[in-house]
Image (cartoon, rainbow, N blue to C red):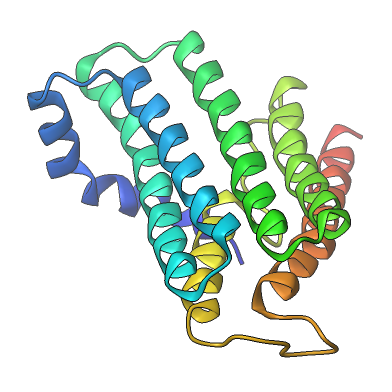
Length: 201
Protein backbone atom coordinates (compact mmCIF):
# COMPACT_ATOMS: atom_id res chain seq x y z
CA UNK A 1 0.00 0.00 0.00
CA UNK A 2 2.66 2.69 -0.41
CA UNK A 3 2.19 5.98 -2.20
CA UNK A 4 5.94 6.25 -2.76
CA UNK A 5 5.58 4.16 -5.91
CA UNK A 6 3.76 7.14 -7.44
CA UNK A 7 6.83 9.36 -6.88
CA UNK A 8 7.64 9.60 -10.64
CA UNK A 9 4.10 10.85 -11.35
CA UNK A 10 4.29 13.35 -8.48
CA UNK A 11 7.62 14.66 -9.75
CA UNK A 12 6.09 15.41 -13.15
CA UNK A 13 3.39 17.42 -11.40
CA UNK A 14 6.09 19.33 -9.53
CA UNK A 15 7.53 21.01 -12.62
CA UNK A 16 5.72 24.39 -12.29
CA UNK A 17 6.42 24.52 -8.55
CA UNK A 18 10.10 23.72 -9.07
CA UNK A 19 10.36 26.44 -11.70
CA UNK A 20 8.65 28.89 -9.36
CA UNK A 21 11.04 28.03 -6.51
CA UNK A 22 14.00 28.40 -8.86
CA UNK A 23 12.65 31.74 -10.08
CA UNK A 24 12.41 32.95 -6.48
CA UNK A 25 16.06 32.08 -5.97
CA UNK A 26 15.40 29.32 -3.45
CA UNK A 27 18.00 26.63 -2.91
CA UNK A 28 17.17 22.95 -2.33
CA UNK A 29 18.56 23.13 1.20
CA UNK A 30 16.50 26.24 1.83
CA UNK A 31 13.35 24.39 0.76
CA UNK A 32 14.30 21.50 3.07
CA UNK A 33 14.64 23.88 6.02
CA UNK A 34 11.32 25.52 5.09
CA UNK A 35 9.71 22.06 5.15
CA UNK A 36 11.02 21.58 8.70
CA UNK A 37 9.57 24.93 9.78
CA UNK A 38 6.21 23.92 8.27
CA UNK A 39 6.30 20.62 10.18
CA UNK A 40 6.85 22.55 13.43
CA UNK A 41 3.87 24.78 12.61
CA UNK A 42 1.76 21.67 11.94
CA UNK A 43 2.81 20.18 15.27
CA UNK A 44 1.91 23.41 17.05
CA UNK A 45 -1.58 23.16 15.59
CA UNK A 46 -1.90 19.60 16.84
CA UNK A 47 -0.63 20.54 20.30
CA UNK A 48 -3.47 23.06 20.67
CA UNK A 49 -5.79 20.10 20.26
CA UNK A 50 -8.82 22.08 19.09
CA UNK A 51 -10.90 21.04 16.03
CA UNK A 52 -10.04 23.94 13.73
CA UNK A 53 -6.35 23.66 14.60
CA UNK A 54 -6.37 19.97 13.74
CA UNK A 55 -7.53 20.98 10.25
CA UNK A 56 -4.77 23.60 10.02
CA UNK A 57 -2.22 21.03 11.17
CA UNK A 58 -3.44 18.56 8.57
CA UNK A 59 -3.09 21.11 5.77
CA UNK A 60 0.42 22.00 6.93
CA UNK A 61 1.43 18.34 6.98
CA UNK A 62 0.43 18.08 3.31
CA UNK A 63 2.49 21.19 2.59
CA UNK A 64 5.45 19.62 4.38
CA UNK A 65 5.20 16.56 2.14
CA UNK A 66 4.96 18.69 -0.99
CA UNK A 67 8.04 20.71 -0.03
CA UNK A 68 9.87 17.46 0.66
CA UNK A 69 9.29 16.49 -2.96
CA UNK A 70 10.25 19.90 -4.30
CA UNK A 71 13.69 20.08 -2.66
CA UNK A 72 15.04 17.02 -4.48
CA UNK A 73 13.49 18.01 -7.80
CA UNK A 74 14.88 21.53 -7.40
CA UNK A 75 18.37 20.14 -6.74
CA UNK A 76 18.21 18.20 -10.00
CA UNK A 77 16.83 21.21 -11.88
CA UNK A 78 19.67 23.41 -10.64
CA UNK A 79 22.28 20.69 -11.16
CA UNK A 80 23.37 20.78 -7.53
CA UNK A 81 22.19 17.35 -6.35
CA UNK A 82 24.75 15.98 -3.90
CA UNK A 83 25.24 13.40 -1.19
CA UNK A 84 25.35 16.23 1.34
CA UNK A 85 21.97 17.51 0.22
CA UNK A 86 20.54 14.00 0.35
CA UNK A 87 21.90 13.58 3.89
CA UNK A 88 20.38 16.89 5.00
CA UNK A 89 17.04 15.94 3.44
CA UNK A 90 16.93 12.62 5.33
CA UNK A 91 17.90 14.24 8.64
CA UNK A 92 15.25 16.94 8.25
CA UNK A 93 12.63 14.33 7.31
CA UNK A 94 13.34 12.40 10.51
CA UNK A 95 13.14 15.52 12.65
CA UNK A 96 9.90 16.46 10.92
CA UNK A 97 8.49 13.00 11.71
CA UNK A 98 9.48 13.37 15.37
CA UNK A 99 8.03 16.86 15.62
CA UNK A 100 4.72 16.05 13.94
CA UNK A 101 4.04 12.83 15.85
CA UNK A 102 5.21 14.49 19.06
CA UNK A 103 2.68 17.23 18.41
CA UNK A 104 -0.09 14.68 17.92
CA UNK A 105 0.81 12.91 21.16
CA UNK A 106 1.07 16.16 23.12
CA UNK A 107 -2.32 17.29 21.85
CA UNK A 108 -4.03 14.22 23.30
CA UNK A 109 -1.61 14.00 26.27
CA UNK A 110 -0.70 10.39 25.56
CA UNK A 111 3.08 10.32 25.43
CA UNK A 112 3.41 6.56 25.89
CA UNK A 113 1.37 6.00 22.77
CA UNK A 114 3.34 8.73 21.04
CA UNK A 115 6.59 6.94 21.93
CA UNK A 116 5.35 3.68 20.42
CA UNK A 117 4.21 5.49 17.29
CA UNK A 118 7.38 7.47 16.75
CA UNK A 119 9.65 4.46 17.27
CA UNK A 120 7.63 2.56 14.67
CA UNK A 121 7.99 5.45 12.22
CA UNK A 122 11.72 5.87 12.88
CA UNK A 123 12.42 2.15 12.51
CA UNK A 124 10.56 2.11 9.19
CA UNK A 125 12.72 4.96 7.91
CA UNK A 126 15.89 3.51 9.41
CA UNK A 127 15.39 0.19 7.64
CA UNK A 128 14.85 2.04 4.36
CA UNK A 129 18.23 3.76 4.55
CA UNK A 130 20.07 0.83 6.14
CA UNK A 131 18.99 -1.45 3.30
CA UNK A 132 20.48 1.11 0.93
CA UNK A 133 23.68 1.15 2.99
CA UNK A 134 24.23 -2.58 2.43
CA UNK A 135 23.92 -2.12 -1.32
CA UNK A 136 20.33 -3.18 -2.02
CA UNK A 137 19.01 0.23 -3.08
CA UNK A 138 16.65 2.57 -1.25
CA UNK A 139 13.64 0.69 0.17
CA UNK A 140 10.34 2.54 -0.15
CA UNK A 141 8.13 -0.51 0.01
CA UNK A 142 6.23 -1.98 2.90
CA UNK A 143 2.85 -1.45 4.46
CA UNK A 144 3.25 2.29 5.04
CA UNK A 145 5.88 4.66 3.67
CA UNK A 146 6.48 8.32 4.52
CA UNK A 147 4.11 9.57 1.85
CA UNK A 148 1.38 7.32 3.26
CA UNK A 149 2.05 8.58 6.79
CA UNK A 150 1.79 12.21 5.82
CA UNK A 151 -1.47 11.67 3.95
CA UNK A 152 -2.91 9.66 6.85
CA UNK A 153 -1.88 12.32 9.38
CA UNK A 154 -3.44 15.04 7.24
CA UNK A 155 -6.66 13.04 6.87
CA UNK A 156 -6.62 12.33 10.60
CA UNK A 157 -6.35 16.05 11.28
CA UNK A 158 -9.26 16.83 8.98
CA UNK A 159 -11.43 14.09 10.51
CA UNK A 160 -10.50 15.13 14.07
CA UNK A 161 -11.69 18.63 13.21
CA UNK A 162 -15.17 17.19 12.67
CA UNK A 163 -15.32 14.07 14.84
CA UNK A 164 -14.59 14.96 18.45
CA UNK A 165 -14.64 12.70 21.47
CA UNK A 166 -14.03 8.94 21.76
CA UNK A 167 -14.56 6.81 18.65
CA UNK A 168 -13.42 3.28 19.60
CA UNK A 169 -12.68 1.88 23.09
CA UNK A 170 -12.33 5.37 24.51
CA UNK A 171 -9.84 6.49 21.87
CA UNK A 172 -10.44 9.50 19.65
CA UNK A 173 -9.31 9.90 16.04
CA UNK A 174 -5.78 11.06 16.93
CA UNK A 175 -5.20 8.27 19.46
CA UNK A 176 -6.35 5.70 16.90
CA UNK A 177 -3.97 7.24 14.36
CA UNK A 178 -1.10 6.87 16.82
CA UNK A 179 -2.07 3.26 17.52
CA UNK A 180 -2.03 2.61 13.78
CA UNK A 181 1.47 4.06 13.40
CA UNK A 182 2.71 2.15 16.44
CA UNK A 183 1.52 -1.20 15.06
CA UNK A 184 1.95 -0.75 11.34
CA UNK A 185 5.22 1.16 11.67
CA UNK A 186 6.94 -1.74 13.40
CA UNK A 187 5.33 -4.25 11.05
CA UNK A 188 6.60 -2.27 8.05
CA UNK A 189 10.09 -2.16 9.54
CA UNK A 190 10.03 -5.93 10.02
CA UNK A 191 8.66 -6.43 6.51
CA UNK A 192 11.52 -4.41 5.06
CA UNK A 193 14.04 -6.27 7.20
CA UNK A 194 12.91 -9.72 6.16
CA UNK A 195 12.71 -8.71 2.51
CA UNK A 196 16.27 -7.37 2.59
CA UNK A 197 17.51 -10.37 4.57
CA UNK A 198 16.14 -12.71 1.92
CA UNK A 199 17.83 -10.67 -0.82
CA UNK A 200 21.17 -10.88 0.99
CA UNK A 201 21.11 -14.66 1.26
